[in-house]
Length: 484
Ligand SMILES: *Cc1c(COP(=O)(O)O)cnc(C)c1O
Image (cartoon, rainbow, N blue to C red):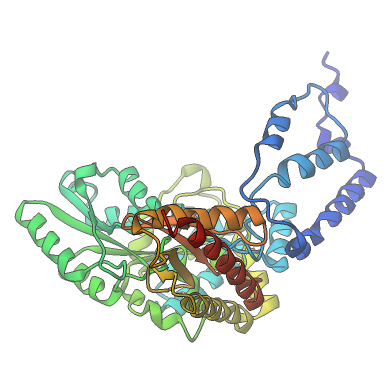
């Protein structure tokens, strides 16, 4: 006989008091986000703690939760780049709203699964409502549109492109001759999605961008014509609203016309730039997206949401569902007539209730405040440019869209062959200082400092102080390099 007790799950044995203690324990850390501004920036995660956790065994006999949690906070959670910090100005990341956090915790407590409508009807309705709201902001007819929340821009992009293949390539018959188009500024997830959907490298056209880092419609159309002449089937244009490097936005209205003319799918990657649609002032930058067939929009980038929170929106519900619908016999009893199940809207089956985070944020903050976050980001970017322009040794390297700024150190009295080197040094030195954090990117072979000022907690004072430090660093470097 097996000893039943021996096989009892730990969950059954957790005493009520212990659960109380666990929630008190979590309480201690909930305030952490509110105090993040006081923490010193420590650069990227450091290796010491990674070494420490490598030494932790997975035990045969469980340990006390307090010990495990303390160890995790000290050596796992604290050991990360402080992406949420208001002066972590690099990459495309934000600090999260406490309401998003509340939604996230509740979704986990109830372990809600939005795979199928009838598992959690109200939760599914909330997701549909948020998707309809976002669709309306973009300019889609919310009654005709659909979409779902995914783990991020990468999955949203893949989902949009799979819909393109299913809709335009007639059951994959045309896949061997299919061609997809994007720009040299597109995020790598776009190119990766094209590979994952079955395209060979010679079926992927990566077009050079113009001086504004945008796709050139005339060049694109030329290439499409040439491919058709050669017996190919152009079927997908993947444009970007807010490129990762410069925040540039491809000319969507012109691209939409080309897509229509050649019976192609237009997908727009708005993982970064999508949130301009929360703003009444800046949503015009994305004019024309209402013509796109699908649109990716990360709310964990510029809309105060914790990971993972991204939406893939589709203009035409019927077209969209066709691409993903399946009828699992083991779920026949669960399907409710008149409702679209989550599993027919995209790639995933079991899904966490990601939409609740944005729901809480919109309910508690209101849409006006979220719009303010976006507008303030643009204000901070223009302040930064104004301050940089006050010194002739800085050179702005790209037009600023989506609150991104790219610049380099290019003093007249230093040999240009050192510009890449000294610009890199600016980043290294400011990061060592720990007040703010700025990484570099490369634009057309030029090293640039790059910031995306999309963190809702970044203040104008943060920007001004950062510029002061940058100027001091620059002036030291100029002295050092002027006579080389
Ligand atoms: C960040 C980003 C992505 C990838 O999104 P994840 O959420 O990191 O998967 C895709 N496209 C653009 C333009 C991005 O900035």
